[in-house]
Length: 252
Image (cartoon, rainbow, N blue to C red):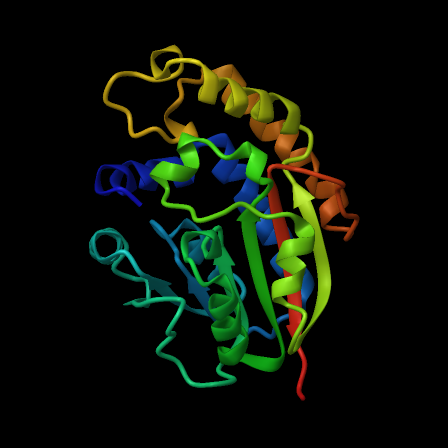
């Protein structure tokens, strides 16, 4: 994450329609895992901490953030969070330690995503869950992916392949399905037209910095969140801008 971007991220995570809708969708999915009240939860790559704050309703949360500047910012901004500065590729936790291990839009940031998933499964208890979200479809690649230092976008098949060993996939689905067409159109146009058509001069280049009137924020939030009525009933969507997967670690 660019240093001039993560500071803005704190507000974005709590006010932008995409983050707000995603947070509600994630909360609904976690509620289906039947965690005990004293469940141990690891949340990796927490950015500015909104997902960790959400997860605190489900158990005792340990957070991890790789970017040192972002880690320092969160330590100062949210001193109540239990957070470490570390990498998903070398988690400093014992085997079989956590009931739930989460990485929301994280593994696309590392070159060795297979190692990242292996580490998540290593620290997860047998019978526990690993819950991951990632961006979907390489043809949606844009400046947004570059400024966020992504290595790739995924198909559901590619993501499921990472979990084929040591886990049983309980649910996987695309999401942000209803807004797929306008977002795809914007991404394609943003590659063809000059940046000045979409952004102010000094903006970082993320989709989140594109100007959106208040009424579109509310509208897009409601549209994206409406998918939750299907997702929380474990009804998968055929395509979307993002993918989620929940895998249960099996003892072998």
